[in-house]
Image 1 (cartoon, rainbow, N blue to C red):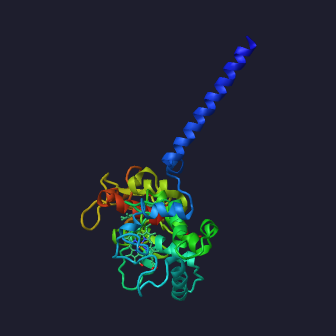
Image 2: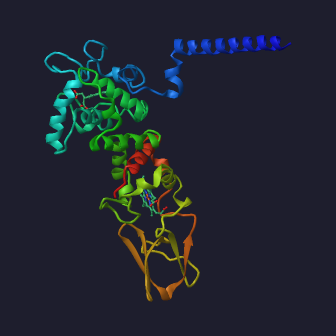
Image 3: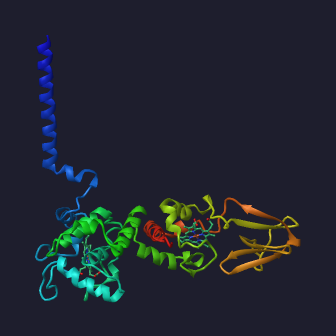
Length: 332
Ligand code: HEC
Ligand code: HEC
C-alpha cells in the first residue's frame, strides 16, 4: 500500500516536471518570454527590435546599407555626408550642442535629445520631420526609448546601459518629458505648448510670468498630476481652484446685473469694500458696482469661468498634447 502511494507520487513529480519543461520550451521557441507584457530589454538587441519594428525608425532611416529609406539621415556610414556611425557621430554633435546651449552635453545626451526633442537640433540639409516617437501613433514607452538609445550607441560607439539608466541632469529632463507624455496617454508637449499659446489657454492663464492673469497661474500645475489636469479641462466646474469661484451679481429689484452691452454678468470676485464690489468678467475686464444697488452675490456651484466647450474645440491629440505640456510645468 505504502509503495503504491510512493510510485504514484514519483509519477506525479515526473509529469509535473515534464509539463513545466514543455511549457518553458514553447515559451523559448515562440519568444513569448520577451514579449510578455510588452517588456523590452534595455540592450542593443532589444533596441534593434524596436528600431526595425514598433518604433518605425526604419521607415525614415537606414543603417549603413541595411534598410531602404533614404530621405532621412543614415545612422551609420554613408558617403561623404555621414563619415561616422551614429555611436561616434553623437560625440561630435554633443560638442555642437554644448556650444549652442552652454550646457555640458555628452554623446548620450545628444542621442536622448534627438528622440525627446527632435526639433532642438536639425541635421544639416534635413527638415524638422523627425517623428515624435513617444506620441501617437508610434507611442514608444520610456524603456523602449532607452533600448533604442543603447542600440544607437552600439553603432560604432561604446554601449553604456548605465549611462542610460542613471542619466545626468540634461538627459533626466528629457526622460521626464517622455514620462510626462506617456502619463498623458502619449502626448507631444512641444505641440501642446503651441496649443496653449495659440488655442486660447494663455488668454486666461499665466506661465512663468507670461500670459493673462485672469485664471490661476499654471507654472506649478504639473505637481497636481495628470488626473487633476485632465479633469480641470474636461469638467472645469467639477472642482474650483480656491479663489477662482464664479459669482453672479443680483440687483435689489431681483434682476441680475447687466454690463454696458446689456449682457448679464458673472465673474471672479476680485475686490469688495464698503462701497463697491468688483467682478472680473474676463482678462482685464473689471466691472465695479455700488453695493447700494446689490441685493446679493450668488456663488455659482455649477459654472466655471473656464469654458467647458474647450474639449469640443480640441482634437483628442491636441488634448493629450496640452496635458503633456501642463505636466511639465513644475516650477519650484
Ligand atoms: C518620419 C520620419 C522619421 C522617423 C519615423 C524617425 N526619424 Fe529620426 N530623423 C528624421 C529626420 C528628418 C531627421 C533629421 C532632422 C533632425 O535632425 O531632426 C532625423 C534625425 C535623427 C537622429 C539624428 C541623426 C544625426 O545625424 O544626428 C537620430 C539619432 C534619429 N533620427 C533616430 C531615430 C530613431 C531611433 C527613430 C525611431 C525610434 C527615428 N529616428 C524615427 C526622421 C525620422
Ligand atoms: C476664459 C478663460 C479661460 C480659458 C480660455 C482657459 N481657462 Fe483654464 N481656468 C480658468 C479659470 C477661471 C480657472 C479656475 C476655475 C476652475 O478651477 O474651474 C481655470 C482652471 C484651470 C486649471 C486648474 C488649475 C488649478 O490650479 O488646479 C487648468 C489645469 C486649466 N484651467 C487649464 C487650461 C487649459 C489647458 C486651457 C486651454 C485649453 C484653459 N485652461 C483655458 C479660465 C480659463
